[in-house]
Image (cartoon, rainbow, N blue to C red; front, side, top):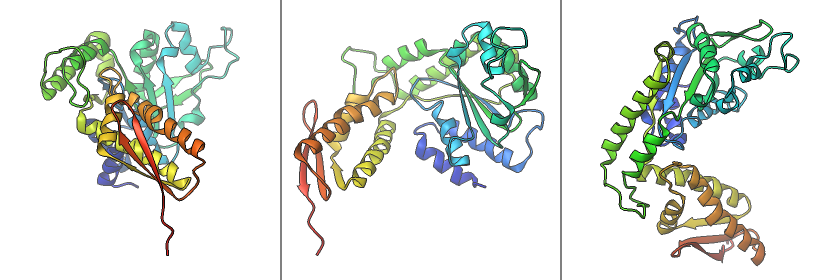
Length: 327
């Protein structure tokens, strides 16, 4: 069983700049481990809001990896697949006599039986209201019936709902808050970073209250607005991505030294106010991994080399050197 501080630190290594959300998850796990949860409800229910690309779904994926060591205790449901009322039958199965009753449902008792299963409903606002009505049962009583009348129990589950219901408003606020590594070309108002986060939180909570019913909101244990990623967060996320790349290169016998200017160029190329950290991984692939792989193939470089990565104006440069043999 993980200790509280150990779990918090592991999550912080995976999810950068979202301490409030991490603390909420850690509290729920500790209460569940102690066995004092309401036995008639899920182990914990969360609604995560805020800018896209900040880790709202990833925190659930990371928690599943930490608790179970793999994805066996993770269920991810994309709510864009339930835009019509009849689409909900994909989740629970259609009753006998209805179209699709012979198709197996996505959710089965076997998928939910593992202790501390993480169930993520992504982009909840894009689903038909029929899914919200179905979730009322889950959030209140920890159960749901399939089309065949079988009981599905969520009492061993942590349920994470993510929503971009306030995406347009958050996007506009983000555009008004300059990012140090990559200021927009247009001239926007220089809004204080903390003030921007407070404004985003206020707007998100207001949007949730307008969109979801009071009975739905009252059944959620914790509603957390994720922060925008600031300069130091982007650098920490980049270092995490680069560690993965460098580890793979090391397996091939190639060591890497990446300069600070090179990192800042990657952040400039991979920072987007609208999409959070997602473009950063693409920038690592496009500007570092792909050109480096091409050079290695062209030069016929094998093991025992080190590559120094530096920044040019718009791209990275790579200088290879043979590692000295140990005496």
